[in-house]
Structure formats: C-alpha cells, structure tokens
Length: 125
Image (cartoon, rainbow, N blue to C red; front, side, top):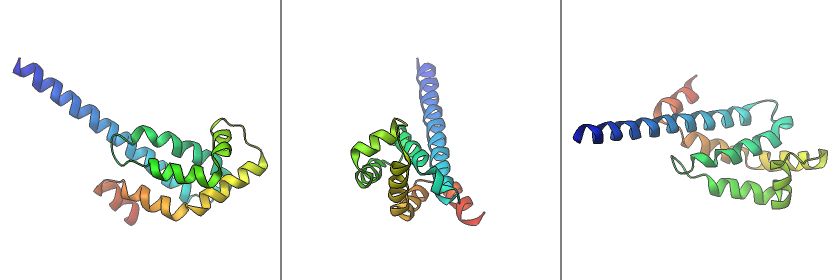
C-alpha cells in the first residue's frame, strides 16, 4: 500500500514538473514575441497566444489580471474578434496599440514567472 502511495506521489510531482516546464516555455515564447522586431505584424498572434497562457494560471503565476487589462485596452468585443481570427486591418492596428501600450509591463511580468535558471539565461545570454 505504501509503495502505491509513493508511486502516485512521484507521478503527481512529475506531472506537475512537466506542466511547470511547459508553462516556462509558453512564457518564454511570449517574451520572444514581444522582443521580436516583427511584433508590428504579430500583435494579433501575440494576443491569442497570451490568452492561451491561461492554462498556466493554476500552475504558476496567475496572469488573468494582465490578460484582463489587455482585453480592456483593446475593447472586449474587438478582443473576441481577434481570438476568433475575425480581424481586419483596422483591428490589427488596434491590437498593435494594445500590445505596444503594455509591452514593457508584459515583459516584466513574463520574466518574473521564470525560474532562476531561465531568468539567468534571459538576462545573460
């Protein structure tokens, strides 16, 4: 009985570690998008990817307040259109405005989600 409990405990810890590592990669990719010189054409993509990071809220840092402010800046109806891939050029410009408005704050928040190793790598690589 004790062996089964230990195996279940280790399996649960391993699953949580894998999830945490997955979220580290999600945050890293978002940060790479923000630092990209192509962010001007990738703003709607960034918004959709940032919204997808909600799966990591229960594992690590809860970024729901950051997503809320991004959606509010964009306008909730426009936000839904971007998520549904129903954007036109005007909406793409609005998306860019929202992303650039919060760019530095998002960078700080995303870096703060990193573990020590990833944070060290980000600043010194």
